[in-house]
Amino acid sequence: MTLMEQIEKQIRQLPPESQREVLDFATFLQLRTHSAPPVSVEEERGRRIKAAFLKLAELKVFADIKDPVEWQRQIRKDRPLPGREV
Image 1: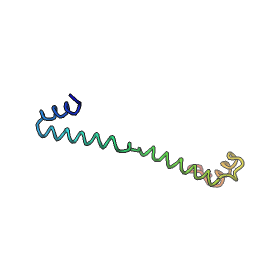
Image 2 (image 1 turned 90 degrees about the vertical axis):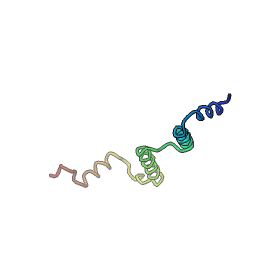
Image 3 (image 1 turned 120 degrees about the vertical axis):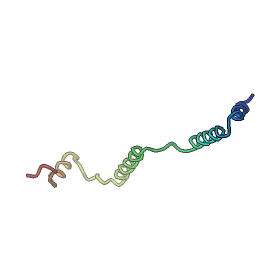
């Protein structure tokens, strides 16, 4: 007896409402198998951040910065930090 024959035999023995549940479950399995896995918000955010950094690198936005640490110090001097007003 094939697998399909075994399944059909089992389903025929069920009441109509249970047969409907079997059909619903089979439909669910088919959709789950053929659909792409859901993408979490964090995964999507990570992809977008990565794309942004790649675009910045491609445009060479920070190419003129010779010393990143000194550049950061200068940037921080330009604006007051919250809670540190003098």
